[in-house]
Length: 108
Image 1 (cartoon, rainbow, N blue to C red):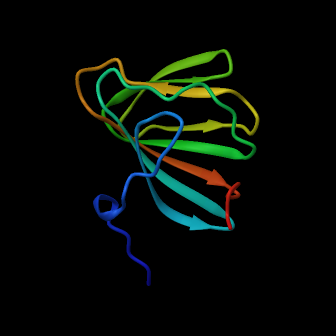
Image 2: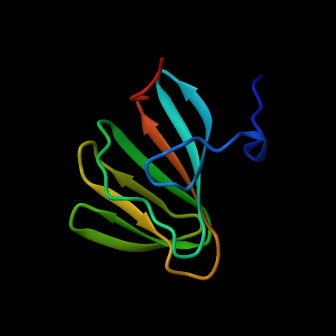
């Protein structure tokens, strides 16, 4: 059994300059927990694999391609490979998102 405490994982450096903690890193999937503080956002970017987002806390705005949606706790959003996507937090509260990439594009 492998148990990971999210708060014990150090944030990894990223191009978005947000709190992103890798919690699972296997060939078939990568899981990262992202915390967006008020007014923080992810820069628009593409991922070479399918991604799904699960909102753990708060309400943020996800943009995938030309579509935009305000997503709140317990919402799952699928983002196909090679489509520009981003997240933003326009609220006054923390937004936490679980990001799952399948398969893992960076497994080493």
